Length: 144
Image (tube, rainbow, N blue to C red):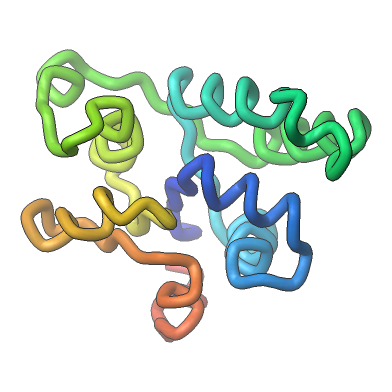
C-alpha cells in the first residue's frame, strides 16, 4: 500500500509558487507514488487559500483549478471521529486539523512548513517533517 501523506496547505501553496523547491518535489512525489490525505477541513483550507487575490499575479485560474483537481482526484478522504476532533495539540487551534487528519487516516507522514506542527512531532509519534527533511529520508521514497 502506498504511503498516506497529509500535506499542509503551506506546502501545497509553496509548491504551486515554486516548481523546483522541496515543497514541489514532495507534492510531485506524493501524487506519483503516495496518497495525499484530506479531510473536509484541510481541503477547504487549501481551496480558500489558493483563491486568495494575492496569488492572482502568480497563479492563473487554470493552474489553481488543476491543483485542486489533481489533489482531489488522488486523495484519500477521511472523516474525523469526535474523539480525535476534540483533542488539542497546537498553540494555533487552526493547525490541529492537520494532526486530526493524519491520526484519522493513520497517515505515515505529515509534511509541513509550520514550526508549531514541527515542534510537537515527538509528542505524538507522528512523522511530521519539513519538505526538505522528508526528501532526505529514504523511507519517504518507499511505497509502503
